[in-house]
Amino acid sequence: MIKVLFVCWGNICRSPMCEFVFKDLVKRKGVEDKFHIESRATHTDEIWNGHGNPVYPPAKEKMAEHGISCKGKRAQLLIQSEYNDYDYIIGMDDLNLKWMKRILKADETSQGFDSAEARRGQKISLLMDYTNRPGSVADPWYTRDFETTYRDVIEGCDGFFKYLEDQKMI
Figure 1 (cartoon, rainbow, N blue to C red):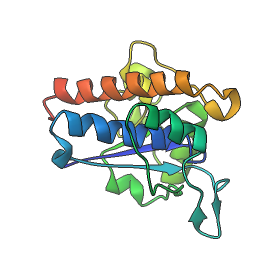
Figure 2: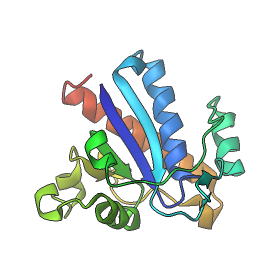
Figure 3: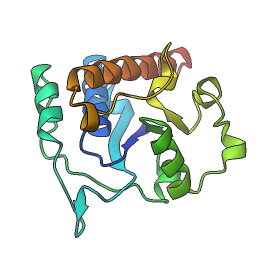
Figure 4: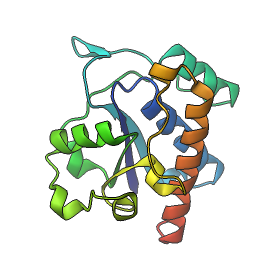
């Protein structure tokens, strides 16, 4: 089983979009039984007294436009022990990457964090490392542009799936 964890700041926009888009992708490809897919936050901004907020309504609406449900998802915090629980921990931008490394206590020197090329396939990477345009997934919290974020998520998830296929993992 391939265990994948998507991570962003609050776990209410980008990372849950990735979680449910990727779940939909592997289901359509007929390999959902080969995956365990979840998402987490690097910060508690959307988690109060241990209770996470649901997916941000515009993110939920954007996915619903494409027939993807995220019903029941609530923000959860990334914790150090998850480093050993997942095969791939995929962040949305450089700031997420910085906090992921801190929380997970990952050794930067052994991970090859210096470039998208070096990160691709590592335990910790960025989603857009698996595309032809490495960088950040657009953050709709600030831009309110959920369409651009959705396109980034689709491109990144497709690229990650193709990477796994190319590596003969699925």
